[in-house]
Length: 335
Image (cartoon, rainbow, N blue to C red; front, side, top):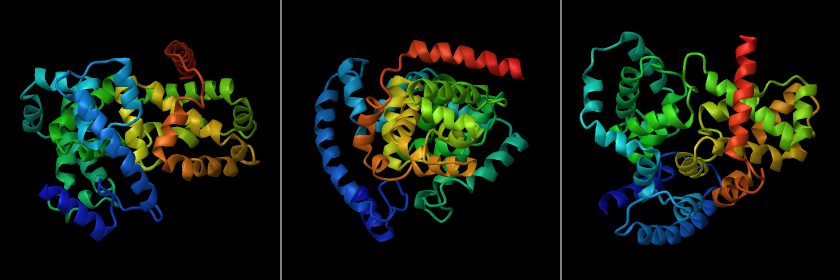
């Protein structure tokens, strides 16, 4: 109770949200309205979790789509992603990874990016006590030791940082990072980033199917998809969309997998189709893709999450799998 009061005082004094990020101007009302929604959801979640195991079901899927209250987020992410099971199977593994002989190249790469991670978050400042920079450093070094093929790749610092904000626990963040990298967005962070390239190509095919006018505009002005959505995918919408919206997306991502990223991207594009089509040059299109990640649609995360399951229409996993195979073959043929 005392720590919650301290956090509330800190938020009031510094103008930060509950995650330590500086609040954008005018966000207080949205936050207040959403807070009452979350309190109602928390009561329902408490009843759901009382005396029963967390299992995959239509009810659980429905609850997750409506948002996991922050007090249960770490628990649910760990269970539904398989990270909890992995952690329990390997009880001393994380500690062993931190005790391994230092790899100077890995240490250098991690140290360089640590200082660039969330400069507008009070918990990641060097002056914070404790500073999450130390825990983030440990997670990324441990992961580099665990997965020598990947080591450390740009973008992982933001992913691990968000996990740390939610779990407040190094070891849990490590196992969630592993679940994301190996199962949910495989091959995104490999040296060739083949998974990332493939999924960007898949998105371009989905836009052709669902928003053909935008696909034609991109083609006409020779705009590569990686220029406008590359950061959306590599950072899983961190620093692209508001914090609470990103966390709601991740709730579904951990439960339903990678197709959530396509739903989010397609919703942003389809909903703002008319605005995008106003662009008549390469730079104007790039600017439009920045604009569509801001504004009232993404700020109201509850409405936005409802939209991602209606706006793009049906999106069967079989379609995504087929498009991935086609896109991967195309990329391989070009290399």
